[in-house]
View (cartoon, rainbow, N blue to C red):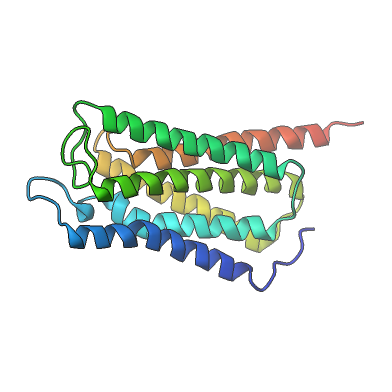
Length: 217
């Protein structure tokens, strides 16, 4: 049975959520106040995913994942799995930002006022997105990998994983509200796609691990 979490585990979870909120929505709010969007372009508060998503759903997801990981015992290959998932997440984040920046007809907004040109806030958001893609992919991979090897899960771990999944789903819904179409037109959409992809891959790996453990001999 997984050990009881340390008394500081909730502090780690809350601290992670606060840090993600401050680094994302908080920082972009400061950028927006210092240099408001031109009247013809959508600003920060025109994007549900950048406000409710970066300010609430994303921090809750990351905090809940940290809590889940810290309530589960370490499993074999934790480090290489988390590293591989994180590198994949970061690489996809960088690739998407590069494609978005190179596009001749992107969806313009206050961070990308013209094609091939990020504002300071745009460059900051690009770096934030890459870092969060890296962390989210690693956390999802760790949480699901450890879950697959933990046996019986305590209620606190189940609830934290459920909260993380619900927050991730809410973020995806907010992205779809912003997109207003099936085609991804905003670099922010990568985070939701990456989170879902990482979760599916990690879940598949966990299921495979369970099948191997269930085999006799």
